[in-house]
Amino acid sequence: MTASPLAAREATLGYGRTVISADLTVDIPEGEFTVIMGPNACGKSTLLKALARMLKPSTGTVLLDGRDIHSQPTRAVARRLGLLPQSPTAPDGITVADLVARGRYPHQGILKQWSADDERVVAEAMEATDIRDLASRGVDELSGGQRQRVWIAMVLAQQTPLLLLDEPTTYLDITHQIEVLDLCAKLHREGRTLVAVLHDLNQAARYATHLIAMREGAVVAEGPPADIVTAENVERVFDLPCRIIDDPESGTPLVIPKALASAPR
Amino acid sequence: MSTAHRAPDLAQPLAAGRASVGAASEPVPRRRTGRRVTGLLVLVAAIAVLTVLSVALGARAMDLGEVWAGLTDPASNAYPVVTELRLPRTALGLAAGAALGLAGALMQAMTRNPLADPGLLGVNTGAAAAVVTAAYFLGFSSFTQTIMFAFLGAAVASVATYLIAGAATATPARLALAGAAVTAAGYAYVSAIQLMDAASLETMRFWSVGSLVNAHTVPIVPVATLIGFASVVGILLARPLNALALGDATATGLGVDPRVLRVAGIAAITVLAGTATAVCGPIVFVGLVVPHVVRAFTGPDQNWVLPYSMLTGAAFLLLTDVIGRVAARPAEVQVGIVCAVVGGPFFIYLVSRRKVARL
Image (tube, rainbow over all chains, first blue to last red; front, side, top):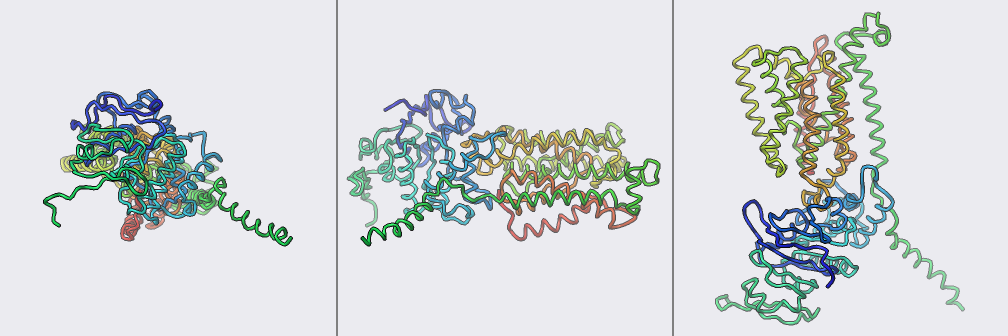
């Protein structure tokens, strides 16, 4: 594992006086597809927000390339690290191409307006997410899966080696969830470092190359899915008795919840 | 042999297919620039025509020859009316209209609230409260003193709204609530003073109808300078506001600090709307309606919405002022009233269509 481009060092994270995570230390390994998972309210989205500099740790630091992320100009950070939040909003009537083009913001300036380079990058981002045919459509007419691909294209247009995605599959049906995750896997194969928060344990086990399991604000286990998705760990994190079998499709661990004795048959 | 001949035929559609697939590096057609440039030219032409009308038309009917003499010959009878009254009034109408249009567009973009207008920051009430304070406690009565106080009041109210909304932690919803609170408190204060003091009521009545009648007594150079400076700042916010339109989180991801952007936006809005309101009284509906009409034409790109709103605001205010001057000759209807009469029903129409664009 090479040096970590993004890390939290003894960070205390929370909102107001509510502390979600205390003294959290996490390394995002370079070139991996990291998935942060855990039960509801375990602090996984909070960690992602902190890594994306949307939340400033009350103590400790978040390091981007070894330096405090909050001490770096926000536009410079935006050229290193792209973020897809959980529920971004699209202005009414905006077209797909215009929305994707807004990803170019950190590369532009007052004197450096829209360039041929911007045009090319936007076209490539739309190609990579397979939305070129939608270019002149309104974002509000699209299906949930298409819209999510448009947002991913917007973040891709930002041209960052690091991508942070906060629950990119929420609100999507299963087909579109897989479609979005396949796209993420492709982006990872092309050399980007990805960090995503996911709800579905089996999807996390299948797509992640590095898993961070959290519970009550602390990291309980981390490592490759094959090593850490064990019946013991799943019970520790989710309080869920289960069996682990090999996913017949991918060979990755597959979590099968045990039938509870009290459950109706 | 025949295969050798057919090969090119096969290759051709293949190559064509590849060309259309591999078009990734070709520009994506996405800009409505042509239409929007044309619209801009039409707007500028409309403003030119309205400017001529505003100088030529008034309570006192004149033919074009008289108007020309009024502009060029200081000795003519028309000179005091045209050069000393109508010209400053036209200039003020343009400046105030542009300021209100831009302030409204900035306010709506900043709060992502299509029903927002600068009044939401407490600008109108703050100015009104300052006007009655100046009249009642300090006994000011000159128009120049009144407008300076009104501007100060507008600034204080919008800073207060921002602080009550939580300063750096202000969200659009908290800004709206804080603005409503400041507005309510301000109106209570204004009403109380007016009930106690007839002179304040009179000053207030004079100021609050929303009028360009006193344009000749307005220090137009400082007013125009303030508005011009704040307009430049406002227009420069177009790109970060485009990022903010995608939500605070996305904007942060793109390298915009929403807190810094809100401070800059509120500062620009306060100067724009504060100056216009101080000088003309509270003119509602320009800041609210103009950006709606503009967005329907330009789409949501603030690079177009902001300059369009400025020009449309200027044209709209000048038009309503001219209408007010000729509608009830020889009397006049104040521009604020015409704006409300024209803008009110139009706004009800917009809302009833339920097509109030989200931002």
